[in-house]
Image 1 (spheres, helix red, strand yellow):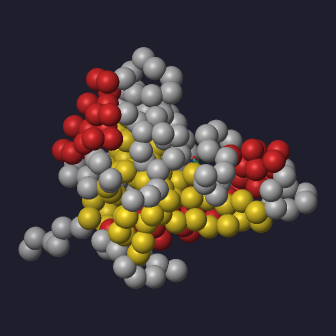
Image 2 (tube, protein in one colour):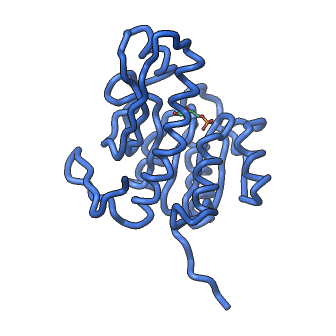
Length: 211
Ligand code: GRF
């Protein structure tokens, strides 16, 4: 008997894959009405690929090409082709350390999301938890947002706050923010998979509460 086809998420990442694991496990537990159809990394040894294979989720390394901070035009075309062939409807970036450009953004317009370890628009870019400590904020957090051509600049879908404690080091703060990410990202993806997310200009609304 043919199963009911689920909403298909593709996850892109360059690192350890703790957010990917949270997403995949939430899908398996039914908390996100979707499945991770494919995991792609630009880093051959990324822990994320290993975590995917442990879960029997298709996972592949794809060469990023010759640039350090973006995909080459040819690599972008390959990434798009592979994700489309896997039937991916939504691309979730989870620690993907490269800027996406025209070919990719056009192919998945309005269907690419990212998690960032700060309350955007504060502290975009690298090492956001260090930026928060240096700035001396008492509250930081994480943000899930749509991806546009800028750096962590797309419309914000959801945010979760995290306190900054007096004895925090960059590492203790990073770990606390990551724990919040693992709650927030699955919640936002569940809302997206259910079709509850409505975009009006820069603002994002929800048809139903996802708290
Ligand atoms: C996360 O902290 C995320 O905010 C940032 O990259 C990190 C990825 O970590 N964009 P992991 O690979 O999901 O553990």
